[in-house]
Length: 291
Image (tube, rainbow, N blue to C red):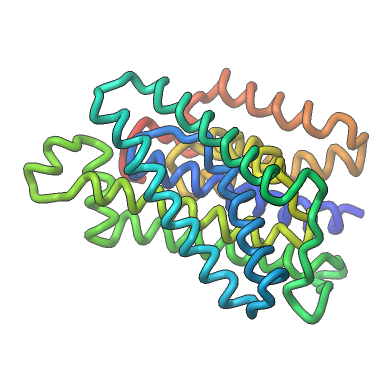
């Protein structure tokens, strides 16, 4: 019983962690808080459904096309909406409100295009389930766990060890000083939003076979991802994954040993507890700083 709950909790937590990585990436590289990240999962799921099931393209081709579409959409949103607002020197809350508006637009566009009925997403792998340590789960679930861990390390290395990653963080800390040093702050911020959207689209394609594809898929999971990012330390890649894992384990063990009715209550109660005791998160991420 314990091992089953542990593995399932880690799998669910990795899903939350993968979503949290997008939130943390945007904040780490641009200093902005976005509430549209969850709906990028919905966008990715529907794009993947279109390429993979409707058009019949191979999965790898569908994944790459979905990533490219999400990357382009992320850049368009940043350059066409977020950048315009920033150039008007608006206060930060306006950026948050703009991302909330974009979120609802994506949800309603998806509903108008594909309908409100949950869409069936075909299995990605020929072997539908895997058994690891005696625990059987969908292959996509284990792949999602592996992808989350790999992306966590990859993003941390990218942000701390590459010139472009350093330019992103410099632009977030002081755009004017970064521009004076020859850094194109506008380009780095746009790429950040594009990469974050691409990560969410990958999550959407992997989650499609497990949850089905519906308009509120990203909004539902996005809240957990955001909570995980806050618990771990908003803007910290390792914190995003750890926070997601904690939420996943808490939910799973609560449902297994008590009742599934209270799993969300307990999960968000832990979020409030962390905010009261350690508002900067487990990894003590303060605004924009190196980790």
